[in-house]
Image (cartoon, rainbow, N blue to C red; front, side, top):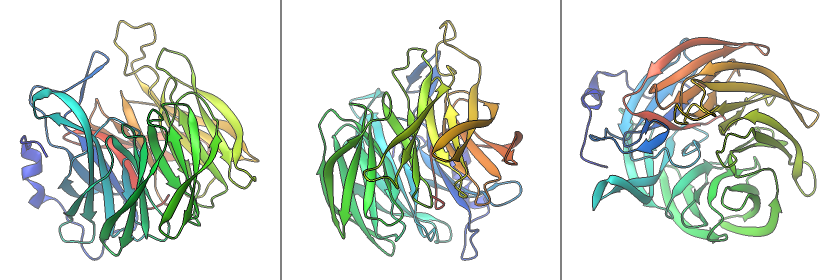
Amino acid sequence: MHRHVTAALAAFATLPLLGSAAPAQLAVSANDGKAVLVDGVNRVPANPGSDYVTIVDLGAKPPKIVAEVLAPTSVVGPPQSVAVAPDESIALVTSATKLDPADEKKLIPNNEVTVIDLKATPPTTIATLTAGNGAAGVSINRAGTMALVANRAAGTVSVFTISGKTVTPAGSVALDARSGPSHVAFTPDGKTALVTRDGDHKISVLSIDGAKVEYTKRDINAGLRPYSMEISAKGDVAVVGNIGIGQGDADTISLIDLKANPPRVVDTVSVGQTPEGVSISPDGKFAAASVMNGSNKPKASPFFNDFGLLKIYSIKNNKLAPVAEAKVGHWCQGVAWSKDSKTVMVQCMVERQLQMFSFNGRTLKASGAIKTTSGPAGIGTALR
């Protein structure tokens, strides 16, 4: 953790805290204090703020902050850099980059995974673990017994076993060194995981047997630079965001049929520039995509737009179909759904807001925002 601590974080004790009667719809937002967007360029600010997580009750009307905890994180990598245990006992937060000790105007790869006890009063960090360099996307299996971390700079996936609130390193899976593993997600039965590889445009299939995790050598091909990903609660499909190369072209999201043997891409639709985050509604009927829409480009760029987009697609008969969209802020990252699939939260870095939308199955309506001190960069819930 770097040395700059904001006044807002010093006031943690004044926040409502998460106790034994914790709400059952937690969303954990990881907020990066060492990244600001300056005319389309991600820069380290002159006085970096603190990295920390905001714990939100997404089931409240309106959603509200219940606690905040200091923890290193990073906007670099897909916004699925937070995993919440199914029983909401712990959260894991990765940090793909950190300030360079030799030059605090620069970032270098990081390998930290922070374990946060969500049941403590107040919630607190209980362990810091080591993954691989560029530790990015992280997931916990439905049994709450294993976590996987995609290491973009190392070309590996780290394996951790979980017993209660104790998380223990258990080896790693080697992929191609240039593959850029970005996110990794478990199927509900815990026997398979998928890894997006934005370095070589593949999605790899891992097999899991107890604590043994292996690369099956089976790869799925979706689109340019598969990045964020989510598997449905039923385990029938996965949605992948293909972020492209950032040159103003319309990028895509893909639907993977996990019931097929072997699993395969069955539909791909154009969504606009840079679908940074994707998320499937808990009822499995819809997919949400946070689309940058050029909002992260220099203002002089022909590809710049002064807003991002939240887009909702239906998932039916192995097809994605547009349902609704709404304007959001700039350089927006992750997306999270409430348990009833009626509230969608989007992280917007420039505004430093968690922007809320109500969804009735047909339309989106802005319904408020939660302010953060640092830029919200990664999001996780126990609903995956």
